[in-house]
Image 1 (cartoon, chains in turn cyan, orange):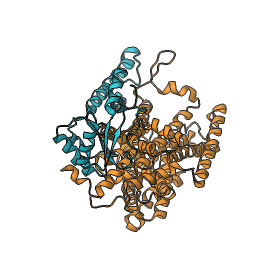
Image 2 (cartoon, chains in turn purple, green):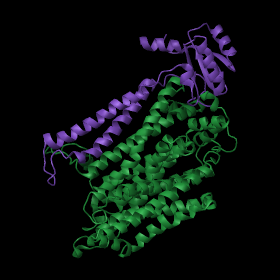
Image 3 (tube, rainbow over the protein chains, first blue to last red):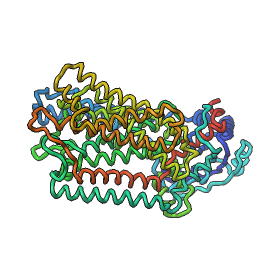
Image 4 (cartoon, each protein chain N blue to C red):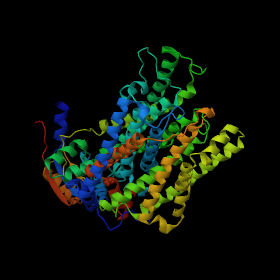
Length: 179
Length: 451
């Protein structure tokens, strides 16, 4: 509850809408050069270079994938080894119990399966999805417009700031949720 | 980046309107006609399959020499169809082929539905599908005996299962931003609620895009080896056995090339119809189709090379049984099937050497249908001609599929098209967020971003 409160509170602020990605990037750079950090950027598609302009760190998803893919591979081998050698050793066509080359296809598939599912899971976790109680800040953001949400600032100052850095339209966003 | 991928001077807002149109209105009559036809075909298949479960597999054309028949042909056929979707969505993504953005959504959807169709066959082929789950997954039986992990049939369960799961996750990940677009456009409360749930509450924040792009790239990277591995593993079902005509080292690459060939043919078939019916000609352009026709030509020749190579090895190995199997294939009782295969897969695509042919809609539609027929017969030739004359001439039989075989095959097409038609009705058929980036780039808005 505590966390939900603080997050929904943070969501209030002033939203500035931009018409094209070039203006958006310039605006983000200007905000950063003024030392502002409490803002969120929204776009209908991934704008190239925005993470640098905003100073975002690399996503940690590749490490999650690596860990789970390795686990899938090792556990895949261990499970086949355990069933074929330890739990019930069975002589199939005179092959050794631990006929590891025959275990490779299943190991490979489990590597990909675990890696892929973990990637998706990590995406949901890091992007804080699913969260269907949040509504879109503006319906045009998923269509063709770009937006910056400035929070933690006096609304009037934020409006003026967004207009000076080139926002076409500025609106106040009232925080919703638990009060 | 001189090539124009989107014609007609469309903007991002036009794109949303065009793609969302079929989703936001009552389906057209042509959609209903297709849907009812698909439903009828599936109904017939389901009825025949139910009757087959009650009476046993004897109603099929299978006999003691031909233990595998049309069902296995259909399995390999449908798994193969799926490969084009993954190739387009994953491999072309990694190679930064931006023309893929117009077609990848449809192709991926086709992959998923094709694999769902393929999975029906090994399960109903067991005759007792309610037990099949225990035979297929590693679950110890009542005497605590495990499945045999040295068997390609078990590899197949893992390969196709993983393929389906990862394709679904990859497809859904791609859909999330587009579902959010549909949600934000929706006026009807039910539609709004459904797309709100499906889009998981996506809002397009740059932090989310950063994770999203990373995850998408990794999923593309993970799917890429799957394109090559799934049909390789399917080919092991044949190649690991010791049946002449199956026991061949060329099978994995041969199957993968054939899978991509047949899959692209199916994508062409579906896209020619979809762009026509839904008015998406500015997004799925003739240039897209021409590129796919080039791939058809290339993979068609790879398949032709594999056919030739099989004969060369049969002769070069000096193995009389192998030689007999291949001679029997081309000149035996099933010569008709063999030559249908060669004509459709090797001869017909040669027309695509001509640019005018590659850009002719009617012609490419006809060629794509013929290629699909040819590829179905390729699997028929591999399965049936290798089995029908085994080592013991007294057991040689001629395999003839029955009404049940054909009816259930027809039903599988019905099942595939039910899903495909629901897809074009309820989900965006074009990867909107990706195409928007392409539109921005074509308007010269993308390059400044790098500076």
